[in-house]
Amino acid sequence: MSFELRDVDFCFNGKKVVDGVSLRLAPGRFYGVIGPNGCGKTTVIDLLCRFRSPQHGQIRYGGQPLGAYSKRQLARAIALVPQNFYINFPFRVRDVVMMGRYPYIPRFGRPSGRDLDIVAEVMESADVAGMAERLVTELSGGERQRVVFARALAQDTPMLILDEATSNLDIGHALRLLDLAARRVRPESGTVLAVFQDINQAAAYCSHLILMSRGRIAAHGDTRAVLTPDTLREVFDVDAKVYHDDYAHALHVVYKR
Picture 1 (tube, one colour):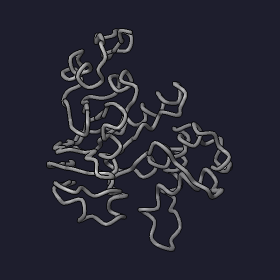
Picture 2 (cartoon, rainbow, N blue to C red):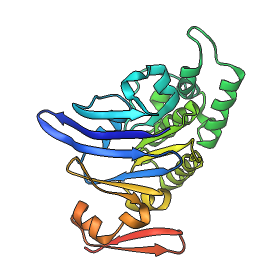
Picture 3 (tube, one colour):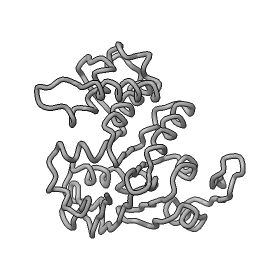
Picture 4 (cartoon, rainbow, N blue to C red):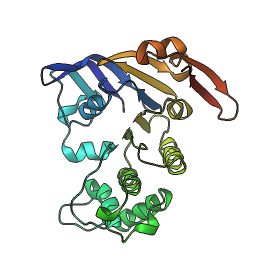
């Protein structure tokens, strides 16, 4: 199912941080969102996850207004890996990952064999199986981020949203988790929307890019069409060279000091 944003505005403390955004996110694509700090990227994520409501315009998912879905229905449709994850209770890592299965477990019920299998599988793939019994409050920032990533994968949703989800990770784990996200992209059923600070990571993984500036969409479309020196100059005010790198099999951006 697709997301549709129609003329969406959102103001914070009297300042318009999302300004007339219209966009359709089709299934089966890996979308990257890039733009300067404060341009509205995370606010758009908050609106898509219904943490905030637009003050003008409409957001639809699967042809229905976002507000028509219950929290459980949304949790079965959208999984989020946020920028920061704070938890003050000493839950075990395994228990945190199991939280991703809560939308499928009846109230007062227990995890099924399938739930346990999914959690074991995603913990192994996200490289957190070895810390299953550790307390999440004792983990480093990068370790905690991998646990939250595993929790989102355990939700097994058609839409996976990553808000700078690899910012605290070393490059090895960042690439491993982005590979896992990319495998979730399936025709007509699997979509990833990821906010990036690293433009080269976005270029390597994303079939489509959305560039934001001052709360508006400056450009969006196929990565090879929109990732250009002119667009980067307009959005980031930098001079850059964009070329295809044969080793990475992707576009690569270098900057002029």
